[in-house]
Image (cartoon, rainbow, N blue to C red; front, top):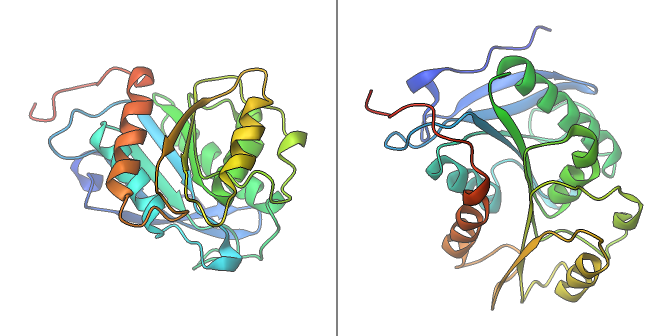
Length: 234
């Protein structure tokens, strides 16, 4: 199958999601592209966002994933959310992070072919943050954003070459799925640790704290945003 073209202009402003089907290594990949908020000047930036564990119900429609996308839209960026293999309408089956990393590689390759003018950043929540981290040193995104990374849960974080670019980790301090102390210990052991934002009294899924998550992402990425390309009213 031929991949579709990246949406343009007002056709994909935030609140007007464009559903796409991309070619992936295990078959089709279901994806959604959204642009920046209508009243925000667009930036040459596309954030590819990875969802949590499919075997526990994680999809690209997860609230943490969509709030992460919202934070990027408010900063003038476009986003691509997609379902890993075996999730939603994406073909294939769960592969414990290996095949999912290939899915992410395929999505990033498509974005870069369609938007050579734009920086590509990676973001992910829980399992999705591990997948993004796993390929970050290889794909060299402009920035990496990890939310509640599942350190200490058997994914082999220590075997991954650490990312050496701008990097943000957001962790809830009352996470009942990922042990925050394991996350902090992993970060403390890195030669070049990321910026860490701890959100007090916050569970894994950021219940009642999604606005705090949005603010943490916006504040964390702001220093690294590329300049806006145009005034949205022009």
